[in-house]
Length: 148
Image 1: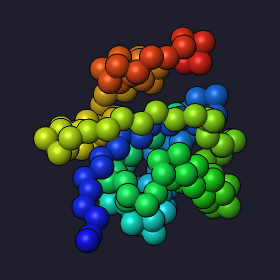
Image 2: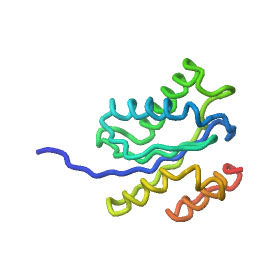
Image 3: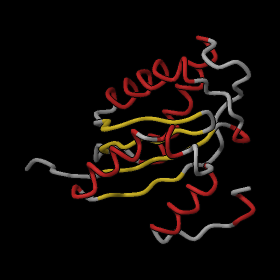
């Protein structure tokens, strides 16, 4: 019997201390690299985008991959790539944690558009405000001290 799944994750994580190091000029190189990491793990990337201090990924999660392992592998590989290629001056790594939210196929196109428009969105809304909204919308309890 074959395995059939539809597991969509919206993954969000920031630079260490939320430092705004990710200049727009080299983000596409980083995003292509992350797409390669996901592709090697048989995860389909629907959309990736971000701003100076954080990234959003919308991906299918292969059933043999644990979410925490995937995020760890993306962060480790991309951090090394950023440093080797000197993509972002002053970059000192990713935050320790991440946020991840599941979505239905009906939400797919809305979420793709949301991630696509991060630059516009963050002219009005800070990362922390956005994260709190996402956590609240998904009913995730959180401790304010870890968000500041």
